[in-house]
Image 1 (tube, rainbow, N blue to C red):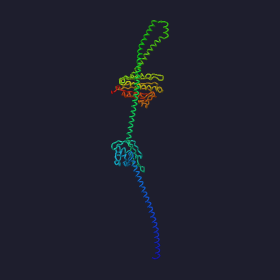
Image 2: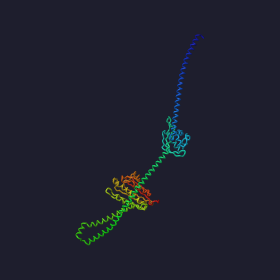
Image 3: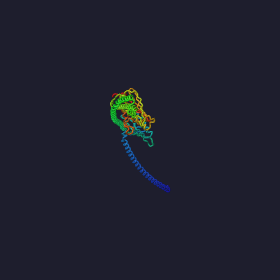
Image 4: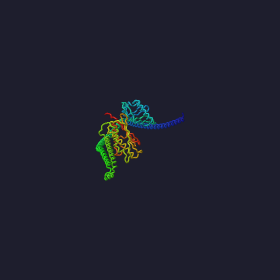
Amino acid sequence: MSIKELNQELISLRQCLQQLKTENAELRQTVLEYTTQLKQHKSEQQAALLERQRIEEQLQTTQQFLYSVIQTMPVAVFVKDVVDLRIVLCNQAAEKLAGVSADEILGKNDYDLFPREEADFFTTRDREALNSKKLLEIPEEIIRTKSGETRILQIKKAPILDSQGQPKYLLVVRYDITEHKQAEAQLKQQAIELEQTLKKLQSTQAQLIQSEKMSSLGQLVAGVAHEINNPVNFISGNLTYANKYIQKLLNLLHLYRINYPNPALEIQMTIQEMEFDFLVEDLLKLLSSMEIGAERIQQIVVSLRIFSRLDEAELKAVDIHQGIESTLSILEHRLKPRANHVEIQVLKDYDDLPLVECYAGQLNQVFMNILSNAIDALEEALIQGKLSHNHPQIRICTQKLNPQQIVIRIIDNGLGIPEQVKQKLFDPFFTTKDVGKGTGLGLSISYQIITERHGGSLECVSSLEEGAELIITIPVVQPKQ
């Protein structure tokens, strides 16, 4: 090899060495950069790992907190999968409600825990909540626990959706409202009992008030009848003799006129001045009127005695028509025409009734209350000018329904009774009259007398503009106590 070739070779080697140095430097730079990047990546990985550990710890803490919350909740919580509706989570309240431990609940569905019929019902509701993807609320649902106890539940079912909005789990929350329902039922029962007690107190109060009032009224009526009876009998008895004596005196005067047709002038003047013929005629009419008046007073006295019947406080077989007639006699002044009212006509349709075993005085009180109300209704209609026919009537019908029962109907052709009033008609102290015009005891006491004392019934049939009909049904003979 020549020197020239050797030099060229050395030059070539130098160039290769230089290139090698350059490449080595570049390689070192690349390795340095890669090492730096590797260190930075490793640092980032470590930071990411620490962050992941922190998040996992935080998530675990949150999960533990949520689990604790769920476990301590006082309501039963179940979480079910959407495939077989098997329970994947439950809390302590759920265990208590089911009556078994969580190990016996988890992984099972309603068919494993309840009878088939109930499980079918629960599953249908679960699917309904999942399909709707909305909260389903069930106000009341009855279940039987494994121990056979019946519980009343209020249930909420809500689907838990994934990121695509599809149901992944079903959350079921069951509130045990058994005690609440039992307490509610107990309160309702207590309210009913209190209402019944109040009605009994009102009824007792009404009875005491009316009893006292009727006792005083009965004694007053009987006393008045007794006091009137003596002077009336005296007047009535003396009228008979007075009539006889006057007839004799008139006969004597007649004989004087026949035998002494021409008396002294003074006597003739006196006869003319006194209008003797008119006086004789009017005197006879006067005596007749006094007899009729005395008879009427005697009839009123008899009616007062029949109405009060203080001597008939016990059961006694009586003529019902006699009691009705005595009541009408006492109310006659309200039936007659007056300055502002036309006459109230009483139409009677009496059947051939047997004697009825009853408390006569109390039954007469019923007739008085019902007839007085009928008269009040007709008078009110007349005052208001709403009785278009202007012919107020009261019809009294009696009928023998069968050998064991009779019925008495008292019907007026007034304005009738509204439905809302009719429902309260027999309640104690209920009245539609102005203050001071009614106590609200009449029909309430009448109802008790008929239903409780006589084992009968008292009904009202009425509608607006159609009048009112009170129907009394009572047995002919009271059952033996």
